Length: 423
Ligand SMILES: Cc1cc2nc3c(=O)[nH]c(=O)nc-3n(C[C@H](O)[C@H](O)[C@H](O)COP(=O)(O)OP(=O)(O)OC[C@H]3O[C@@H](n4cnc5c(N)ncnc54)[C@H](O)[C@@H]3O)c2cc1C
Image (cartoon, rainbow, N blue to C red; front, top):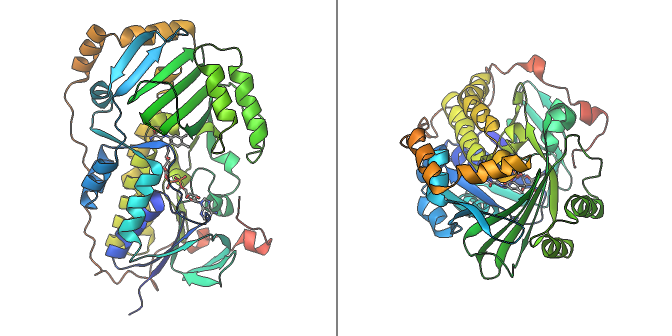
C-alpha cells in the first residue's frame, strides 16, 4: 500500500513539528524550505503551557531545557539607567500561568529538524512554484525540482505565507495591523545585566537589550504608529531610516544601540501584525502556525501556537485521514487557543502609550503590588491538550471518499495565470 503523501512548505517550528507527528501516523512527508539550510539563531521564543505538553510527548523536553536562555526577568529603567521596576521570571510565569522555557527560535527548529531528519524528505533551497488541485490530489511544480503529486499540502511558511497568498489571496485581507513596528538584531552587547531583559521607555516607544551570555545578546525596538508606514519589505535601508527617525534624540543607551543596529547585518523590522482568517484550509491545502494565525511577537505565543497547531493538525489527520473531518476537527480544536492568545498582547507592559502609562506600569510592578496581583491571579493550572493516537493504522483515505469539499478547490488560479508563489 502506498503511503499518502504530504508536502509541507516551511522548515522552522510549525513545519518540522507537523512532520514529526505525521510520519508517526504513517504519512510520507516531504518538507521544502526556501532557505539554503536550516535557519539557526534568531529571536527567543517561549515554550510554555500546552506547548510544554507537546514537547514532552515528543520526548524533547530535556533537550529543550538544555538549550534554554537563562532569563532572570525584565527590568525597566529611566534615561539615567536607574531601575524603576523589575519583574522576575517567577512573576512572569505566574502572569502566563505556566513554566516558561525561553529558547532561540533556531535552536528549537534545530531540535525539531534533528528529531525528524531521518524520516522526512527535507529539501532546502527549494520552494513551490504552482499547484493545481483536483478531487484526488495536488499537482505541485517547484522552483528547481521536478513536478510531484501530493495528497495534501501544508503551508507552514510564516507570517508572509506564499501558500496563503496563492490559495486565499493577498495578505492585506488577513493581516491585522496592531499599531506598532518592531525591530531586532542579534549582537554582542557591551552593556546590560546578564540574564535580564532591560527596557527603556518613552511614550509609545521601547528600546530593550538582553544580554544572555558573553558574545550573545539581542537589541529590540518597538514603536507605536497609528497608521501603517509605507516601505518595501526588501528595502532594509529604508527600514533602518524609519527606526532612526522614531528613536533619534532619545536618551539612555539608545544612540549606541542605533549605531550597533545600523552596522548589524541581521537587522529585522516588521509591522506588529496578526493573521486572522475565517478558515485555515481550502480543499487539500491547509495552513499551520504563523501562516494561519500569527498572534504577533507581542503575544509571546508564536511557538506555542505553532507547536500545538502542528500537533492538533497531525492528530486529526491521524484520526480521520486526509478528509474534511480532519481539517474541521483541527480548526475546532485550535481556534479557542488562537482566539485567547490573539487577545493577549503585552504591548501595555513593554511599550506603554503615555508617560502616565509608564509610571503606572512601574508602580504596578513594585514588589508589594506585584504580590497582591499575583495572589489575585490564583494558582497555576497545568495546561493540557488532548492526547491523539499516532498509529500508522488508518488507511488514511488518500484516495476516494475524503469528504473534502472539492467545490472549494481553486482550480489553480495562480497556475493559470502563471504566477509564482515566491515572496
Ligand atoms: C522579532 C520576533 C520576536 C518574536 N518573539 C517571540 C517570543 O517572544 N515568543 C514566541 O513564542 N514567539 C516569538 N516570535 C514568533 C515566532 O518566531 C514564530 O511565531 C514561530 O517561529 C512560528 O513558527 P512558524 O514555523 O509558523 O513560522 P516561521 O518561524 O516564520 O517559519 C516559516 C518558515 O517558512 C519558510 N518559508 C517562507 N516562505 C517560504 C516559501 N515560499 N517556500 C519555502 N519555505 C518558505 C521560512 O524560511 C521559514 O523557515 C517572534 C517573532 C519575531 C519575528
